[in-house]
Length: 306
Image 1 (tube, rainbow, N blue to C red):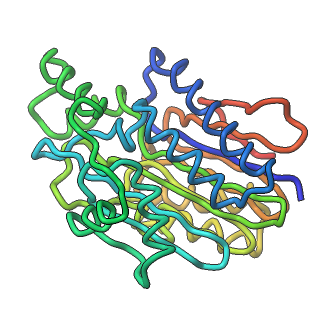
Image 2: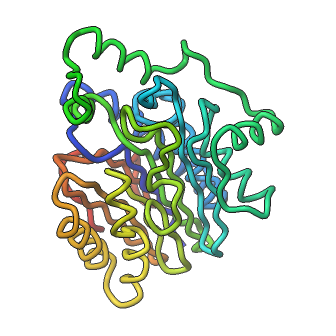
Image 3: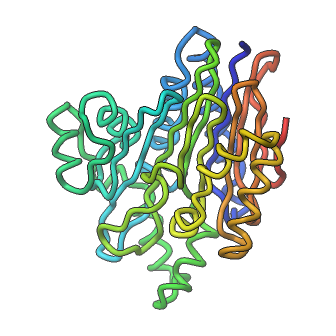
């Protein structure tokens, strides 16, 4: 089977001045993940590599680029899943480096599915994970710059709306390896100025991530709306009856009818190598690579169905 990987850097309002820098990181993330697949690595290893790279970039609302809660702290959500049903996630975990790798350890080392909060962080510290410190948290610094500049309103909705024009959203990846194995991974800092302890869709199986033997999908957008519509579960289930493009469209159209436009987007793969990316927002940064391509293709403002 020809390997495939597709990664995203969030759906929403994308300030044009940030597009070029994000293109570079999405390009590199897809390339890094594809090299894992090309070398015979698993789809799981590929998606974790790609997402961890985006976490470390500081250019997306994940990992080092994550935005703060209403208390000014960083709380992170992440998850991984493979097509045998194995799943691991962390939620509202404070400023741990590479939460997607921590979610992988939850899956591999514990009988649990999700660990949350300080205890999730302590689990990571016992395994040798380290904390991120203030000078590493580029998302936190950019928020304070926004506030100090007077561009941020005192009202929560205004702040959130403005932040969407400045910051990316969830990052994620899905991949198919040479053995037809499917996997997905997601990571996010969540909604700007959320309440402490809030978990979005990224840590919820079926909402922000879903993988079966037939298809894999990860989501980005307003977490509460994605949970309400169980977006990724619907895509994977629809794929049992419909083509991948039809499955993605039906699932996203349902969320749009339920919660309106500007609610999110998805990327998806099936076991035959079909690729899909769709959103109901202004744009979504996506990069993909498959056998026969010289380099990844990066797209920001158009859907992808191959």
